[in-house]
Image (tube, one colour):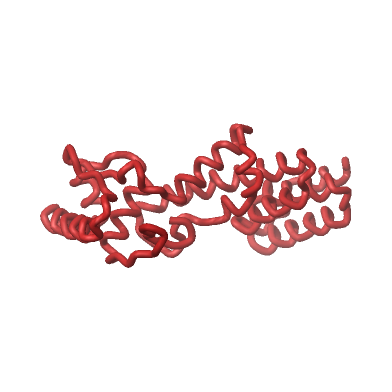
Length: 223
């Protein structure tokens, strides 16, 4: 689900038709049982109820044809079975641990790499828009906290990677640039911090016509 859709069974990628991919993606994103009528209506919004229901049955048939249990269809609802692993869920759990200051040694070793992926960036399904933005905000906040926490732990190399990952995900996000500047200052690299400030200033002026807030420059002046 992160960066691109891939279904893997027993360690190997499996090809599956696009309608079935869309169904699996919907179930992975929503993470709770969905009524069949709701799933069909979301995935085939511009179709009649009968046509949407038929398309849903076809997608489910394609999933069942894999002969590996993936979707629970009991009680008139649809959801992924508990043993289906989803990278999106793992990334969200890691992000929440960082935000709660409950990160583990595994989280610290994984660092920014665990949160660099976007939720299916090349998919344009309307139903995914809010979920994609929600995940983007979650990982950006987590990357900024990660940078702060790793810098405090004297792991400035890993901290700067986390901060730069936040900037790469949203170059106009002032708090991401602030995270980069803070890590540079923690290392005593004032010149690097000033360069990052100037990069942020140029980006903001070029793209939105306003400079960043004075809080950014204040970081360096008070260092």
